[in-house]
Image 1 (spheres, rainbow over the protein chains, first blue to last red):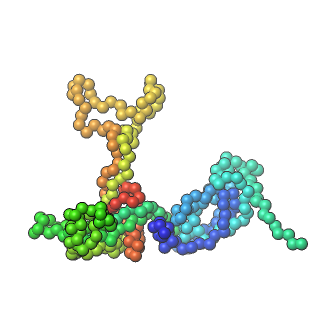
Image 2 (cartoon, one colour; image 1 turned 135 degrees about the vertical axis):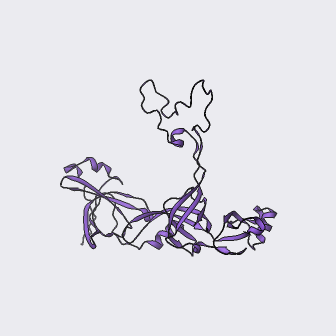
Length: 121
Length: 205
């Protein structure tokens, strides 16, 4: 095993997150510290980017808050990322959705991926 | 002073419990063998000669082989002298990453990446000519004037010009030892370290 992977494995605990990719709508629950109290805040939006690998991997979530686009970058292995909930799988053709920054309103919608449903006959 | 020879492996980042991400460099340091002990009586100064990295016997000269045989070890690739070593070591003993503790403030010495022949903008931080107006068109990264006219009739010594850049010995001070993996001989220091991956670095305290 190479050294970087070894160090990463030794220092970061395994985290179980649902598999998601660019275009998916997720809710990230992350810890914030107010004074000396810790609480969990959530950030819900579309994933526009996943980047990097190993300990340095991160993803960016974009949402429209009061008409203003807000983006937040979360490192995958940050101890402050508590959990991730996958709300909707999106149907997109790119891995990086930076074109979303120029869009607003109806054109900024992401189609939901249609899942195959098992029929019982 | 105490120190060890190591090989830069690469960079990664680690998180502390509060979630702060710190960039760090992994260095595979040691084990180094003490191959010579110099003393004031015999050599005029105190120093320890450390050797690191195995080398095949067929690639080493007879004098190397015999020099390392005195320390009962195989021929090594790199040997470096550390003046006034603070630990008492005898010839043939090994030095590992254990000489450092987590949280130590260390210096790292390395050779920076070679950049080849570079112009003054990259090499000395000149700002270039700037705009394209006033008749300029193909000299935006030129150095400009390098001196006076007939009174001097020469370029002053030390005038900064283009030339070979990089491959310099650089010492970085004030790096912190973040983590030590004694079983793998890895040592994690904060921030970046001079040189490419696989290059030899010295860690000193």
